[in-house]
Image (tube, rainbow, N blue to C red):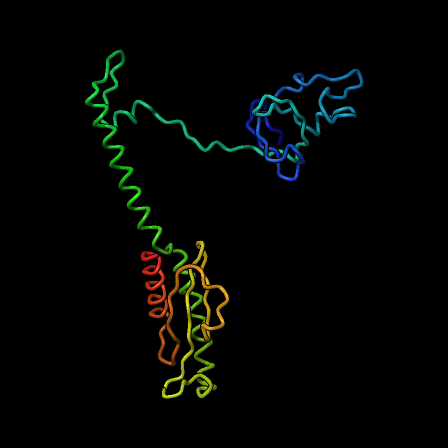
Length: 227
């Protein structure tokens, strides 16, 4: 379906010098043509087929043409807001033709600043936590990992028993870096990437995957808070 005139659009990536530029669809009559139907625009040398291309006025005022399959609609990010309702919510009277007292404006601004401080506080706390949906992914992965490694401990307990210990075990670590997680097992001396926050424990024949996951996640979040 073709975009209507006035539609805000973006030119797709890999479209040369026009890549990612935005503008609006305009009437094709706004593009001047030669007697042979060639647009009087830079780079054009053959007649234009308006069934295949759009006429676009870029944000900087420049007119261009672009193939329709290289153009995408820009969805509006801002919703219309009822300014009157917003002001009333802040305690500012909005009677038409009246003036607002300076004290009321200052009181409303103080409330805005208070909300901003609360937001920053909550955001800081959230930044030190692994999102719940990611925690579920980690727990699901560890459940399978624990089941697999327990079989290894059962088959070759001597291979995983440290000198002086009667219990076979396998070291396991949870790494959290740049909003991504990674599980590593075995000797930590071989870890090549030591960035981010960490939690460490071990898998034994008695390990419960949920408890292991909670322990590793708690350690990571504590490391995040202290870093």
